Image (cartoon, rainbow, N blue to C red; front, side, top):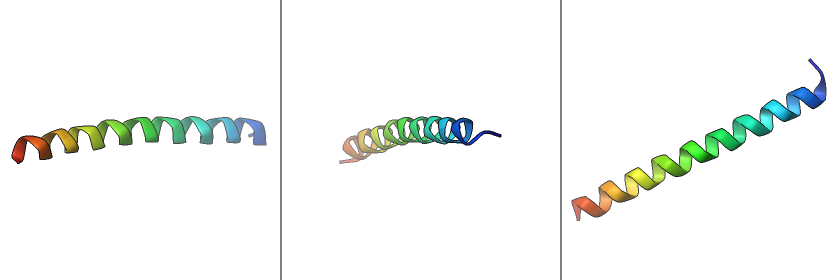
Length: 36
């Protein structure tokens, strides 16, 4: 595997992980607001 490909896939994985993380945090935040 070329280093450029590895860097590209790493960047893609990080971007996807942060997007999922933001969605999860938003859901938790909304659930917390409903519980208050």
